[in-house]
Length: 258
Image 1 (cartoon, rainbow, N blue to C red):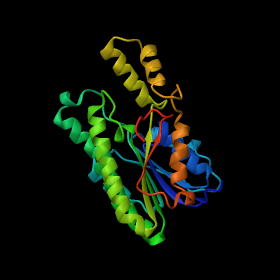
Image 2: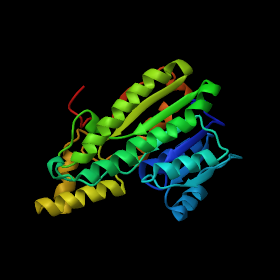
Image 3: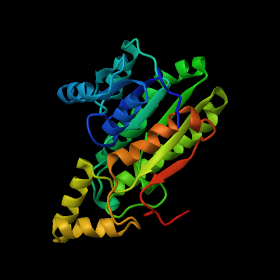
């Protein structure tokens, strides 16, 4: 299938590892000019060197998503304009929602919703001018089914999903779509953290926790980051032009709801 996104410009958040990195690589394979954004410059340089490049214009921006003001200034300072925005940020620490401190909610809300909003406000005017825009938010299946032990994450992911749906309703008339990809358990550093935390709290071994999480999915395994990226890149393409305002679980069938 020809996705027809050659020479489009994409900004990919959290692109030094995991799903963000896999999405950046796949977009570059499709001929997209990719700009990476994350806080670690050394890692950004490394990924930049790994991107497929056929006379494309790849770049990176160093920014910390705990500081929306700084993020806004850095995006406004660049001369780059984007047709595709991939919002992707590592999730909050796990734990019961009742035990969460207020500053945990505030940090997560800033890193996920506020920064998504800052980027959208900076980039959408160009998308409107082009009559083409794709905003894809990589969030979590907890949007459909809250996950035990991830109280703050469940709360904030739900807020991002509502923000996304509202934005999709407002921007659809301009040829801009806004969709959410909901990964299930995926082989990333984030998953390793969750497994280690569960093992520590339950007294089970890492292997026992890992197997239980795999068995929760009909696929009986974890996803590869590239499998999540497949959905991200499709939604960024011309072929997804009439898909708007939806949540797409990529979880091997783990989510119980329709």
